[in-house]
Length: 454
Ligand SMILES: *[C@@H]1O[C@H](CO)[C@@H](O)[C@H](O)[C@H]1NC(C)=O
Image (spheres, rainbow, N blue to C red):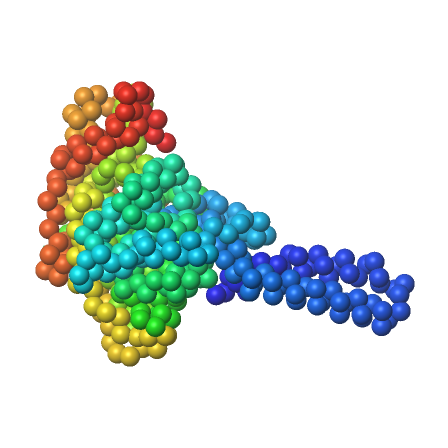
């Protein structure tokens, strides 16, 4: 793919050419320097050949500093200094590795799927992978373990998955060579694409990571999927944030979504349009899921319910945002187990892609669903519930909602997902937070020590 073109040895090339000239410049006879130049050109071409054909994996898997679950500052580092990539060593390839990939993706139930789960060490990715494995589907994970948030949490999730037989390949969705290899080793029937750069406010610090993961990474994945002889059906994570500044509630899939309030939202919206294109041109079956504020055990530390818990336990004050004129800020919090059921429902009802080897053979399915809880809860109520569960009073610091990406209100209309996927959330915020807090205390301070979340 394109990054192969500019990846590995360009810096080396320049060094070699430059050093070939000054030493032998005017002092030697013309044909001698031409001979030298020819010699060095052959050496250089030889090096390129060795690089590409002997170890394709080390060329491109080394780009893995970004987007399997999320992308971080490392991706911008990697853009500004591409030579760093070739210093990394390959972490994939070889017969033993292929065996692990195949074993993990092996279907163990009748009519089961083999699913590639991107962002498998992420919050939703871990839960979906575990659920698929439990019911007998083959599951292979892919994640780049970037440090957008504490990677030790991702490693702990990985351990959890490995114990249930899910192998996570460490790599990036922008790594076309790796993706191609995975599809050569396993003819995946489905892709559950959850790798993304998440977070709304972080986009102001590291905008390129959103483009890298949510736009370029998605395209890279779709390119490989459309080329497959037997194209997989793809279910992927969009976001409720695409509703942006909409004021009509509840949010329905038919509503216009052309007023994103953050770059994150804009890249997710772009993903929906890109999905349309690949469905239209190549016959890929694509289902986008607009998640509404997913929470629960093994959740993301950058989310409010998570760091509120940490800060309340540490006696730190927590910021509580309010809208204009003391308006309520509310979220349609959705418990992870309900989201997992929605994801599985989407996979189970996904029709086959119709194309093959990059050629469309007929029209294919294209869907978008809200996955929410249909009961928005004011953030102040979230804090009250946490106080009750933790038995600690929170230090509330009420402040204006900054205009940097967060919207004031989300509320999902889920009747479409109910009808088409059988989606029916059953966990209210109180019950879900209890489960979260139980996990949190056990994970961070099993012996009653001070919590040490990031
Ligand atoms: C929810 O969405 C469905 C279409 O999926 C629509 O028929 C219904 O009117 C919507 N409900 C509300 C309250 O907006």
